[in-house]
Image (cartoon, rainbow, N blue to C red):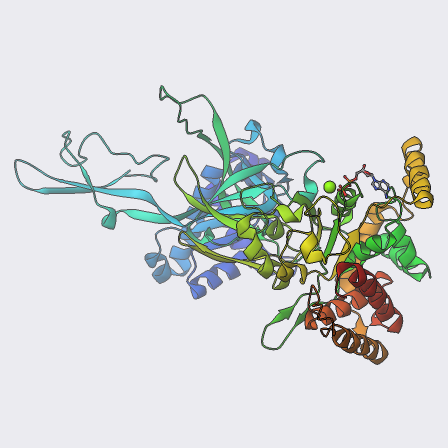
Length: 614
Ligand code: ADP
Ligand code: MG
């Protein structure tokens, strides 16, 4: 201890030692291995797990998180020194190596970032909502001029040391002849790096109720560009910096206001859906215990929005939507969704919005939005141009942000015109494709949709099919697995019961307490989605087959020639399969039996009658 304290702390030396000597528990020289791999793969970047540095030398780890600019520089030098020694030929071909730090001990929420951390190494977690086009950013400018007296060409790089800052700078003198002359920038000879700006937003489930999501800009350079797409959940490590806020006001002058951004060093894209809900051994015990209850399905359904009276079938549909069917991937790569979409169409004041809001809170990765969407990107995605900087960027809409979860879309009939065409693909293929202003992308939108809409003419008209009642084309309607028509018709007995229920809930919140605690229900749902993949038994298959054929026969135009509002197509058969699977999943069954198929058929029939399939 004494000897290390006496010696001056030399971060470069320490970092080199770390790379050369760090060993994993089973004795592997991890970074020697990775460096060898870099040479083999012709890479410039070395990913370093921050935990390893902490294990090796706490002081070094602290130095890097407190002085990341210096830390990154010395880490880069250390890699270069090792490369020069061990792989001199490869080192010759590379101008600079990049250390990439992964997993620092503290991961910030975006709303925790503040001026205390400016200039520090931070890691933050969120969801990518915007991605700009890739641009080239100058790091060393090449300037030249012809000496007017001698006719000589004077050429030089600027800045001599380090890289170009926030603005394109031009030295006031020629660095060769020291005279103030007109310097010409030569882009072809200047050095550039690829540059991209993304916006990372808080995860929808982490936003405190009633608050707007916060976001932060993140700058990606070099091999970090295009690593993340809108909708991806990421952990970004980087240096927190500030940039002056561009002011368009006159008189032109900078305000003393700066906005935060993160200069990214590493981006980890989280692949696994639903992994973020932790299920402990104890939870697992409780979940299995619940599943043994013969009334488990009824208890789950009753636990959905217990404050809302009635609507049993709607709640059952919501439960099925939460569990979902089993997605199928064919050999040729085509995918059939397992996600269940449900639409509620009905009179105002029938608790549609309440049901949606409740669902968004208990669903893993749940999100509530209106048909217009909360941003310009609406429900799918859009390409926009930023006014102050002129940069083009791709922004994700609600269905992309809800990827892997449940999107609750209220007033879906009010969606943007662009969404009306794009939502077909989003609901069925569960992707959003966009090609605009040089940005071409296909984003994932693997979400279940619970949507609600109001009747076009104020009240639902039962004499008309659903497509006449709501401002949505049949092509969109047919993509919903179940459509519920909710009518508000006065009925003495029912109204009295409803009034009693509402009055009770209002006077005693305990009355609306769910059978199953919402946190446990959330875990139960994630457990089922993760581990249960029910298979249809032959009897269940036969039942669905017979039902489908009889529906097809019944939907033939009758003699009266009355056409059906929505054609019965194989899509409805797929919907029935999903509902059957979801019903089995609800009880954690690996087999979907006749009982499950029967319930799927019952719900489908109940909704079809009102929707106007005839
Ligand atoms: P919608 O979105 O269908 O127009 P809301 O969800 O805004 O209706 O509901 C209006 C109000 O009426 C809410 O406060 C809701 O709790 C209440 N309400 C409507 N139907 C019921 C019901 N069946 N049970 C309990 N409360 C209800
Ligand atoms: Mg409403």
